[in-house]
Amino acid sequence: MGLLKSIKKRIDWATKVKFDKRTGFYKYNRFGKTIYIRYPRHYLEVNSNIWNCENLVFHYYLPNPCDVIVDLGAGYGEEAIYLSKYANGFRYIGVEAQPVIYECLANTFYEAGEEFVASPYVITDKEKVKFASGRSYAAVGEIPAAYIDIPTMNWEKFIQSYDISRIDLFKMNIEGAEQQVIENIKDFNIIKRFIISCHDFRADNGEGEWYRTKDIVTRKLEERGYVLKGFNYGISWADDWIYAERGT
Image (cartoon, rainbow, N blue to C red; front, side, top):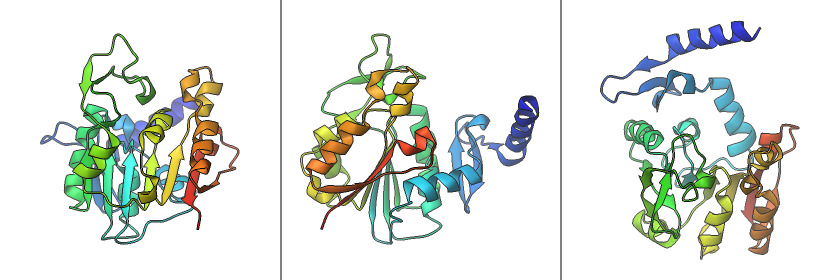
């Protein structure tokens, strides 16, 4: 069964994913737009894309026209492209610090329209951070062998540079670094809602205690007046997501 599934996936890649000579990346069509990816194996099945968006990212709040969405850890931009099915006129700022993934995201957003903005920064107070290929966002600046310099920007400079006066939905999927980002935010009044992927399941799997952030993030948001909702799908990685909305 495992071999048959592997063969089927490769057939799907061959029929749905094309090499793009202009960029040197691969690409596929999704919801009338083009998504660029590094490898064919990174192709996201449409059913998985829809499930993630409907049951997690936009489950409690589907952004409206004129909304401002900030997506920290935007990846290839699948959630942003999904959103374009339901609204227009919004502003979507996708932040992706992994250099190659960012370049794919920038190509996706460039073709998707001017409402999509790609940003390459690590949001941190540190003046300098390094990545090592294949390592997580949570380990940024902590790996002696890291060798890829990543541009940084603190929170205040970030919102000034991108002319952000309000955030209707702030999504974070940054592999355990969400605690540090929240600690660096000085003004929560501009942020109406959060949707955050914590990664406690990875800590439970023995991958490192830096992934265990759900309780800390929950407490920090509640202290700042947000009302939280969780998920209960019986799937560890999905149930680690947190939705928070400022109370009225």
